[in-house]
Image (cartoon, rainbow, N blue to C red; front, side, top):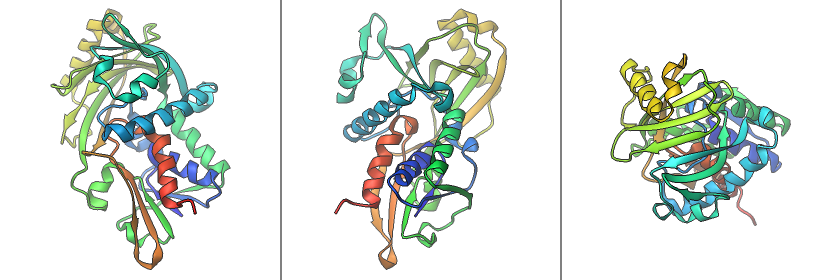
Length: 304
């Protein structure tokens, strides 16, 4: 069988399938380190993803896995880190929030100890775990999902599904980030204004302090904008003044694969073959990766 796409959703799905005894190959147009997943902030939290009832189950299933993986942070890239979501209230969240261990109201929002994933490390670890299970990753560009020569094809192409399926409901939500030297900050912080395309978040990663961010609908630009970067640093420095003097290490831009709802469904192909779609995860691909992977595996190979 073939999984198309090597972002966090594609690799996680391939791992789940390979570890269930399937012979899996991943076809990818570009290596994992060049996917949108590689530049994600990496904080576990359902963000810009629907539908909420399904997202709850997928996110909680993934949370359980990440809590286990945090036992080997240097290997898996997953750590449990304390932080605060400013301006967020429990009664404004879905049912999943009541099942997040330690999530609690504080004076300015919600506090929790949540998984923070160092995405380059985690993607490399997923690739190695897939190889141990017998899976292979091949550089292959796909122009027609139905033409992939496999009895089962799983479509994890993210934003690429817009042209490949084709599915015009998939659209980009541009996110720009700034990586700076960490002046000693050990906790994460977010403040998301849903009425604006600008937000404020600070996420400590092993390679530096990740500052964000933006959520610009239907913007395809992958070029970092200097004015946007300066505004990001300024917003974060209002929260933590020591950030103002931190040396900039890198600029990152990613295009979130947004959709009105995640598409996770089975589609028959000619000759008795099967196509399973697993895309449209918006800003929460990391958050729901394991839950969606398990459901995709069940759709690919339904229990008798």
